[in-house]
Amino acid sequence: MTEPNSLPPHVHPTVALLPWYANGTLAAADRAAVSAHLQDCPSCRTELDELVRVGNQIKQAVSASPMPSTGLAQTVFLRVRQEARQGQEEVRRTSPVMTEPRTLMANIDRWLRNLFVPQWAPTLVVTLLVAQLGVLLWTLSQPVPSVDVGGSITSRGLGSPTARLRVEFQPSASMQQVQTLLQDMHGRVVDGPNAEGVFIMEIPASDPAAIEQRLQALQSRHEVIRHVEALRP
Amino acid sequence: MAAFEELYRRYDKRVFRYICTFLHDRAAAEEALSDTMLAVWQGAGSFSHTSRISTWIFGIARHKALDAMRRNVRRQQDVELNAAADIAQPGANPIDQIQRDQVAILTKNAIDRLSHDHREILFFVFFEELPYEDIALLLGIPVNTVKTRVFYAKKQLRQHLSSLQSGEPVT
Image 1 (cartoon, rainbow over the protein chains, first blue to last red):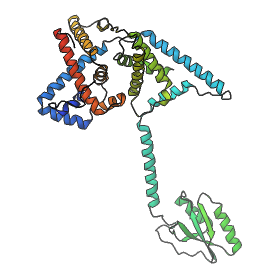
Image 2: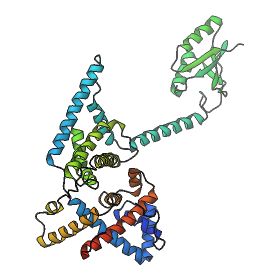
Image 3: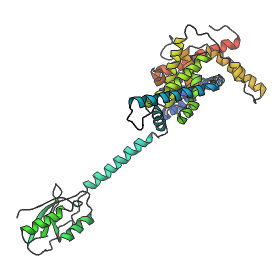
Image 4: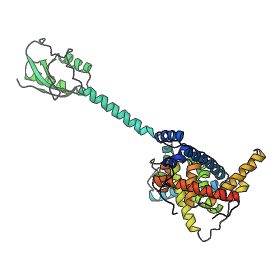
C-alpha cells in the first residue's frame, strides 16, 4: 500500500476523527471539539453523513456474511477437553506426589474469573489503604494527651517514699488502659512525653526490692507498656 | 470448561467475520477460528488486563489468519463465500429486503475489492466499532496511520461502489 500517511491538504484535519465520532468511541474532549467544528462546516457534515451511511452498509454486508458451522464449536470443545486431560496426565506424571494437580483447566478458570473481577477493585483497595495510612499519620501527629486530663501534670502527692520510672507506652494502648494501669500501681505521670514518647511515672516504693517488684509487675503488662526502667535518684 | 464455552459463544461469530476479511475460503476460515480459540484457551494465563479481551482475541485471530493465508497462498482458490444465500432474512418486508440484500451484496463486492489493510480497518471501525487507540494497538501501527488509513479506505470503497453501481469494470 503506497497511500500517504497524511490527509490531502484540502481536507480538514477534523475529518480524521469523524469515523470515531460516528462510531461513538471518541473521547469527550475530542467529541466536543468535533461537534463544535461540525456546527460551522457543511463539508464535514456531508462527510459525516456519508460515513454513517457507508458504516451502515458495511455493518449490513458483514452481518450477512456466513457464520461458522454449528459443529465447529463442538469440535473445538472436544479438542480443549482432550488437551485438558492430557495436561492433567502430564502433571500427574511429572508431579506424582501432588495430591491436587494444578491443571490447565484450573488456569483457564482462574483467568476467566479474573475477567469478571472489576478493574476498579485494586484501585479501591489501594485507596482504602492510603486513607487508613492518612488517618494513622494524622492520629500520630496529634499531641499525645498526657495521662492526666488537661494536658498538665498534676502534683498531688503519693506520700513518701516514691520511685520514678521511665515509661514508654505501647502505641496501641488506649487511654483507659493507661489509666487503669496507673490506678493499679497507685502511680501517676509526673512528666512527659519527651520527643521519644517517654513519660516519667512516679510510684510508691519504700526500698529497692519494692521498686524491682513494681518494675516486674509493670513489665508484665505488655499490652500497655512497651518499655519501663527505674530512674536513678 | 463452562466458562470457556461461554467465551467461545460470545466471540466465535465476531472472530469468524474478522477472519473472513483475510480468508475467502470457508474451510480455511473455520480452521483459523478453531486455532484462534484453542490459542485463547492455551494462552489464558498469559492474558494481562492491559488491553480489552476483545482486542487480545482479535490479535490472536489476526496471527492465525495471516498464518493460514501464508499456508494457503499456493492452493488457495478464491472461493467466494456465497453471500446472497446467507443474506436473506425471512420475515422482513420482501421489497425492502430485496433492496437491502442488493445493497449488502454490492457493498460486499466493493469491500472484497479493497486491499486487505483497507478491509480490516473498515471492519474494526464500522463493524466492531473500536476506538482508534485499540485499532492502533491491535495492528501495531501509529494512531495517525490508523486515521489516514480509514480515510483512504473509505475513499477507495466509495470508488468501488460507484464503479459497481454504474457497471464499470473495477480497476
